[in-house]
Length: 410
Image (cartoon, rainbow, N blue to C red; front, top):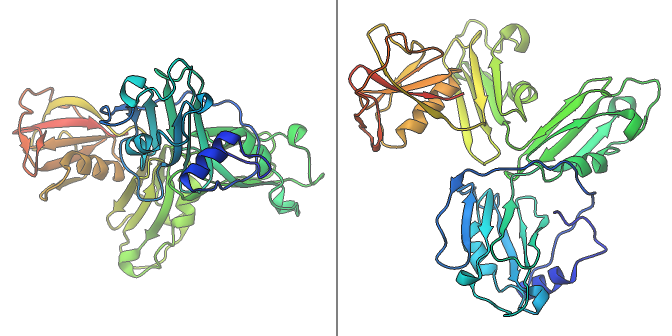
């Protein structure tokens, strides 16, 4: 829930924030609809102090992007002191993109015996807006869900190209989509009205996710009957350059790539000089890009020269999955790009990111430090000797002699 009224602050919030010495930031908007059931997959260990954090997006976001607890109280309805749970909840959840926190009086204590206690928390994300998460009495045994990965609509306009005042659709879109991880919004003039009769109208919107980056979505005229797709799980392009190695201006492809891929969990993009132009004639040009996903991770694309005609994939879906161990031969089973992983670090992640950035479906680790990519495999059958530790990351297995540990990366 987002606080969106400057006229009313619940007494529990006022007392709790006074106890914490903090005042809320407010905004305006409306209730939202059709919240999907969001699942979180990475189990987290119980905390030494406080309740158990059951599941969360464990990767810490950079400072100011993830959850920041302002205050938390167990049993406020029973007269318990405001903020009695702030430290424990902060220890469990601060900096995470999302956090599921199980309330357990056996761990955190019982501040008001013989009274059924609620649990209330207030927190901010990078946008500074105060959010509330609460559990009704009796809260013990229940799970509190906090998230900074959802949508916050900043602006939406239907008919800007027809001279309509900007922002005429902001409240309606916010009511439908704020707080959701992803939202498909059907534009219907019968519902939202026709601000410019006899003019074919566009629909444009901007919104922000927990990573703080502003994303845009636009529908061409006539927009009514079309669906605007907003997503905080998807791609947010930061920068893209075609021909940087040839002196072309940095970022010359950012808007084109963003218009194509922003908001999608997976986006195939083909570099085509007939569409984007040739910024450096008679020079073989690279194509580079960087983008963020909803969890705050930063990813890159690097296509070697000449990149024209090449296809890459920008991907913010599930990370990767192990397929199996497969035989290789000099005529490679995975016949796409390859590289040697000859520096310390997370070898598997680097190989997956490399192959994904090259637009390939599969990644294969072999002989300790070799990474192969391809869109097909299993030309020579399965193998049984994928048991060699990665040279620069011994905790991972990197195939074997003429054997690939194969992962699906798209």
